[in-house]
Amino acid sequence: MSLDLRPALDCPQLLAKPVFQALTGIDPALSASVSVAPIDANLADTAAFCEAYEVSLDASANCIVVAGKRGDSVTYAACVVLATTRADVNGVVRKLLGTRKASFAPMEEATSLTGMEYGGITPIGVPTDWRVLVDSRVAEVPQAIIGAGIRGAKIQLPGHVLAALPGVELIEGLAQ
Image 1 (cartoon, helix red, strand yellow):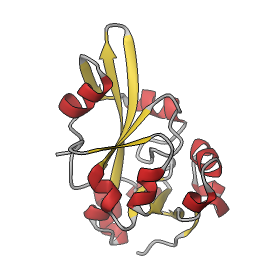
Image 2 (tube, rainbow, N blue to C red):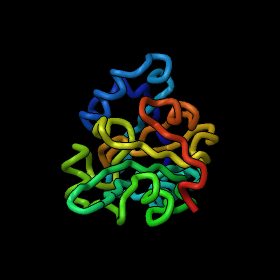
Image 3 (tube, rainbow, N blue to C red):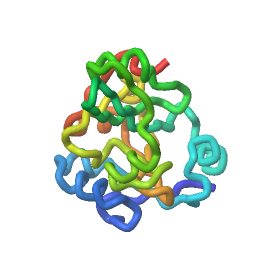
């Protein structure tokens, strides 16, 4: 199968509501380079998606929601890493958040806070008070594939565009 890419802003039905709202609020020069494609929702998980749609793992980026805790305080971050790597949650992410503990946010918490579906969470449209931490290697990908906020679609955009989105912090060594 191949991706049937379309301009993202022309396809709000393929984007979670917060993702579409975020894309409409950014510089049109950036949003113009963001495409979206419908996919089989049963193939949304990275390995299955890449195999079925013949997308290299090197071009696929995963967004994980991390919850950092210090006492009763919880700090959230969206972390974006290439599918060939793993986010250093207990080292780099925890230190960046300034917390004692950091872990993947529970699925129900991540989906309710983002307004996105599990398996489709993307850094575009996460709550504005969250940090968006992107591994520097993602910025180098010519066309990165990320979630669209729903399991039934994927976004494609140049890595440098993802890195230029509002609030994004490029982090060297975010992933191992």
